[in-house]
Length: 93
Image (cartoon, rainbow, N blue to C red):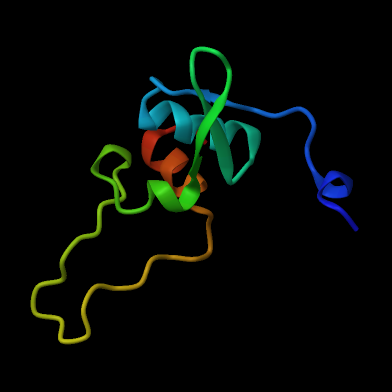
C-alpha cells in the first residue's frame, strides 16, 4: 500500500496569518487532527496539529500546576479529542 492509496485529496489548509483559534476551529469543523499551513503563494510551510494546540494559553488548554499534590498535575481526560475539548470550551459544539 502506498501513501496515495490512503491520502485525502480535498486538503483543508490554513493561512500562515490565521489565529490559533481559527486553526483549532478548522480541526473541529472538519473533524481532522492536523492542517497544513500555507503562505500567500499557497505553498505548504508547515503543519498545525491537535498536539500543537495542547497546553496553549490561546486555546484555554494551558497546563495548570497542582498545588499540594505529590503526584503532580492530573493527566488530561483522554475520552475526548483535543479539538473536541477546545470546541466545548469555546462553545462551538
